[in-house]
Amino acid sequence: MKTVILCGGEGTRLREFTEVIPKPMVEIGNRPILWHIMSGYSSRGFDDFVLCLGYKGHEIKKYFLEYQSINRDFTVTFGASPETVFHGENVPLNWKVTLADTGRSSLTGTRLGKVLKYLNPGETFALTYGDGVSDVNLPEALAFHKKEGRLATVTGVNPPGRFGEIENEGSRVVSFWEKPAASGALINGGFFFFEPDFARYLPPEGEDEMLEHGPLRRCAADGELTVYRHRGFWQCMDTVRDWRYLEDLWNENKAPWKTWK
Image 1 (cartoon, rainbow, N blue to C red):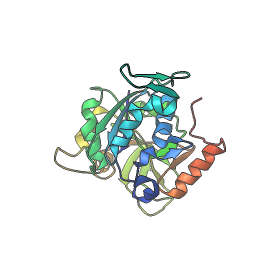
Image 2 (image 1 turned 30 degrees about the vertical axis):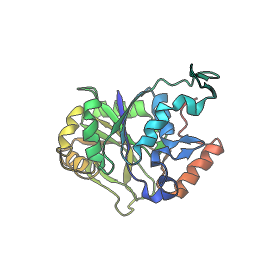
Image 3 (image 1 turned 90 degrees about the horizontal axis):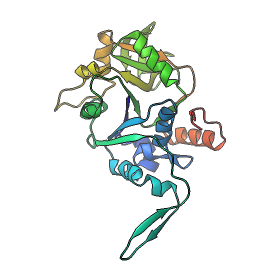
Image 4 (image 1 turned 30 degrees about the horizontal axis):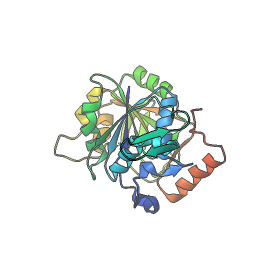
């Protein structure tokens, strides 16, 4: 199964970092938060990724092209017979990563539409953002999605209300609203599963639209969006304060999102 990760935003509230690198490359414990997110998926058996790149996307491309040299010691021999020799064990990764340029300023629904060609025809796919970590049980969430039999499932969480609010009746989402005032309702936790037919809710070519506005609202209005409630750890990295919190958890060996060995 493919996992789409939205990596294209400018991260304006993290300008201390994002003037130089894209938000998904901001490090927690000397590894980009994107690596943490992908490691979490991989630990649950999701190893095939499609990254939607935009703002400073070349930095993410460079990271994966140079992954071995970034994470291992090596010796470079120049001259007539150039050679690079890596030392120590190979960095063990079973990931397949497709890096797709989806436009510097495209909105999230448009970004998803641009990578549909890289998804497996007729197959369910996962989607998340490149700036949030969680200990959500992804296989359980996928099983819930399949059982519910609708086109889309969003993970609902209960942090302070400044994200996408979900009004639900049982498991069915009645409405989906982005960044409302706090009300104590479930909010968009950012871990999704979609059926291929969800594509009909995406904006047509030439139009630009946020996934969280038109597509998910239309899907909810048609009764095709369900919510999987996650009661465990969830945290986005929107601000420097968020980053410090995640960095402290990692450095204290208290990171709940570390579901890998």
